[in-house]
Image 1: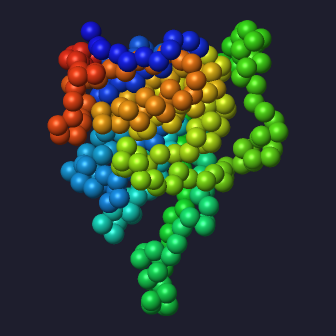
Image 2: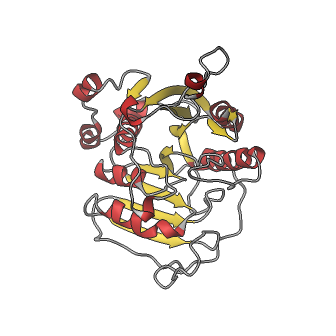
Image 3: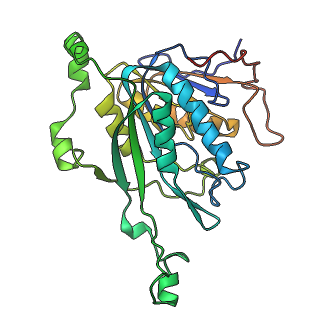
Length: 306
């Protein structure tokens, strides 16, 4: 049995599994209504240097996770990837194109792409874009990136007759604020949202967190009140916190057990809820860390993915 840590039990239910999301055997087939996640950047020098042996190994991770997502997501429902191409060792890698190909080959439909644009004021002329200033001639131009892609995939097609079968209280609680749609331009394929700025908190180091506003929009647009949202790369727990605030349940997978306290405090700040934490043997942690509170458990033998 897993040892769990819980807040006050009430309202929404949340579970965090510390383990590799290549294997999400804790989740039943077609038990998830929405996925919002940001896969780790491939060997980004500021976050994950040397994490993967090569780009093919990274794509293999995405492919494995895509298989598991296809198994656990309900028919007609949505998977959102916050992801973008990455410059590593001077080479621009087509992560958006390759992730899209992987998801389509797995069986998902490519539904939409939204560009998340960060404020220009938070960027500066870098060594990359500054080359053209030092050498103001053709062929020296390399732009700085202030955007990320929100890739939206769908498993089959949604049966809209099910909406009419929902209880009116669920429909009322799930109603999207039309003023927010118009005022904040949710209707466009470009979203202007301020990014999460770096902090000195050691528990945030190594986390490329997306803003709560981004997660909030996706939760409201693609899930109903009381449904379950999954983040297979949970990071500091943003997706689960936002799900709780909006009356949704959540499940998150995170490989780094060292983030336990940060995740626990972030999700718990959303109010009265039930939060369970489980650690598997395939999680990782900093050397010398105490395992007294949540000891690892032997994970179940891997099952077929579909």
